[in-house]
Image (cartoon, rainbow, N blue to C red):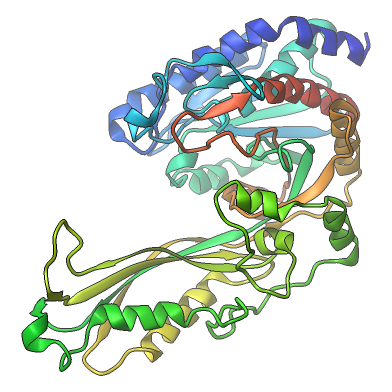
Length: 458
């Protein structure tokens, strides 16, 4: 039978596929809140059962946190070994009063841009995960079996830092290692162009507290003669960038490579409308390194951003206090071969160098991870790109991603497996926000895309 029969099955089965997605969305699998631990177990059980309905032997594998789901099929196949990764956990729903409906009572709604399915996890990542399972379901219905060896690998802690992921991958490396790891947790470029993400920025988090006087002081009695930690903090933060938007931490740009001519030309061909991109959030001017294009700023250049700053009295009314402490949280998005550990050391030395007498600093390090990049020389990449282009009717692109998806690097570094990131989210899906939605076109064409990709890769 042909691919056309699989695509026809997907089309006719879309209502049933939508109902299955609703079943999964109704499970409030919030991984970061211990009150929802049993719901995470329920979501894992649901996926094990759904894989069983496909004829895939699967297990719920316990970890110190929430369980993994692992299934294998066609283990004796001579073709390529594909691994598909997704996560079944979701973000908290607060603030609940900003949702139009119950976040765990998913509904298909008509909007000005077409029908969407709305609910927590609809786009991140349950809807994306189900596009692959539904493609496999249609393929099996038509052909009786999947076309190659496939490992299904679903995580339950992605939205809470994946504390169990690396140990699990190391302990089960031989079982999980594959030729290509398919990751469906990204989106379309500008909500219309199918894309394969080949560059992901890394992430480094730092929190620090500047201590001045022993206690908060009366600003009339001590103002002027005493050091104010917030003033010191302001100087530290203001000095992190120069007037051209470059980051001033010593040796920060070590390991940052220039774009290849081929990649630069492809990105220019995307005709990115940065004015529209910024205008959607009430901005107008690119504020990064002024000698870089807007796409470089968000895909291939590193950043340093202040995520929070506080100190003194911030309640209602007014309190004329000279605070004893000032606090800030800083994150760095990393690219290329930048070393997170070296940047942490150099950032701390920079802060220390900015302190006047009578001030000390305490640091608290948060998560860190290097950037990852994928070469597209494996013929499977071009086959997948062509399959996406055929389904969506526009040339698919190799793109970067400003965010961080650590699992991609783990596949490379732990399993020696090449990640291929393909997703169908749209820019207005409200990931992590109230009224999260997944476009029904994305869901439908995403299923069809995976069927085409399975056909192309095998």
